[in-house]
Amino acid sequence: MKFSARVVALLLGACVGLAWIATQHERAALEAEVEKRGAALAENLARNAREPLLAGEELDQLTLDRLVQAVGRGEGVVGARVLDREGRVAASLDGTERGSAGDRLVKTGGAATELHSARVGGRLVVASPVVFSDVLVGEAQVELDLHALVGPVLRSSRRQLALVALGVIVFGMVAGVVFVAFLVGPLRRLRAAVERLTAGDLTVRIPPTSRDEVGELARAFNEMGESLQQKERIQHAFGRYVSEHVLNQLLQSTEGGDELGGAEREVTIVFIDIRGFTRLSEGMKARDVVSMLNRFFQIASDRILARGGTIDKYIGDSVMAYFGAPVPQPDHALRAVASAMDILRESSESERSPGIGLPAQIGIGIHSGVVVVGNIGSDRRMDFTAIGDAVNVAHRLEKLAAPGEILVSEAVQRRVRGAVRLRFEGERQLSGRQEPVHVYAVELGAPDVAPAPGPA
Image (cartoon, rainbow, N blue to C red; front, top):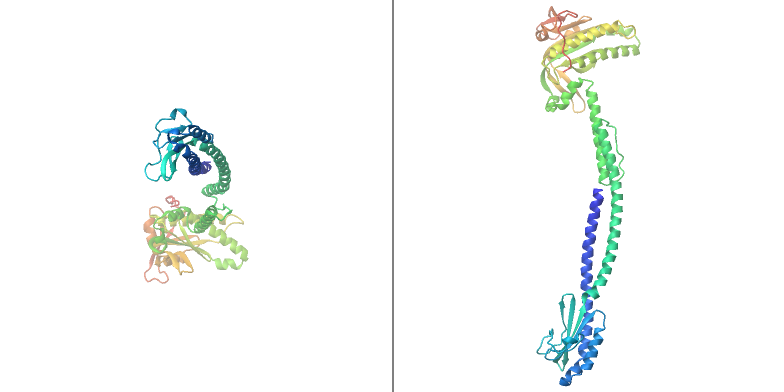
């Protein structure tokens, strides 16, 4: 409605302006024609009044009166008079003017042969000199009513222009409504699509119906929807590796780009492995092996993500995870131990469930240290992983762990003592390391185990 009102106002203004210009132009043209007609009447009166004026004192008054009366019968003529050589009114439509001094328009002296005109209010006075042998002997004046001659024509023109303007305005209103309907329809669909997109429906799309700016806007909206949907897919895929809270912090972090490029972090590494998997899988069908691995990975993933950890990778029948990155966690060691205890408890309960349990036991190794966390690889293939000696130590501890056992290093023991009961297992020489490592075993079900932290 606003657009239609503006269109109508614009058309109305344009029509009024054009009508005024046309009226002024027509008025000027009509007045020029009236002046020509008055000039013709004045010249004719001057030519016919020359001989009666030359009679001197024996002025042919009757002839002059007839000439003036004849001119007065013309349309729009409201005055006609003949002035003698001295400028007195010799004959006039208004008998009271006879003998009085008239207003001369023709210049005196010399050869005066030019027509003269003057506007007096709404009247036009045209004067023609009466000349004999290049001598001015008098003046003929014709007075025309411009309102009577020009007014009716202008009023008729105004009516016609008003009708044309009304038609243009009606056409403009109809055209504006139709145009707005074509414009508002796609915009309303776009608004509805934006509302659905805001509500979380990233699948909404708008089929472009034109190649104009509105169509370009619809195509841009569709491209935005595709980008958001792609971002959601990436976010969902990355969410399988880290907890939802960690993922949200990564997305909101202003330093996320630097961290993803590779940053040193103190983390706690966890390795979880199925004991005797090779021997166990020899007597099982491939489908059953895959089913068992999926149940194992499901239990491990759920418990790791529930404690705010990040799943690095699945290696055969093993899981590698870490805590404290990419989002820092001051209690990363306690989170790692708590998730390992959760995994052993749930796997033990699952083992006692016929048909769905894990027909195997699990060994876990945990170590804390400084690693590099970030994208490792080439420009064609990258992995978001942790690299460092701490990873190797955690892996070696996992190899030493017996079925159903959690082994931690002294670095972990220093961070969780008082919250988790540990048993010193002595010094162990790990493969690839010169110095022995103090190894501790986590005692499950101890009465003084503190509640483990939840998600980050």
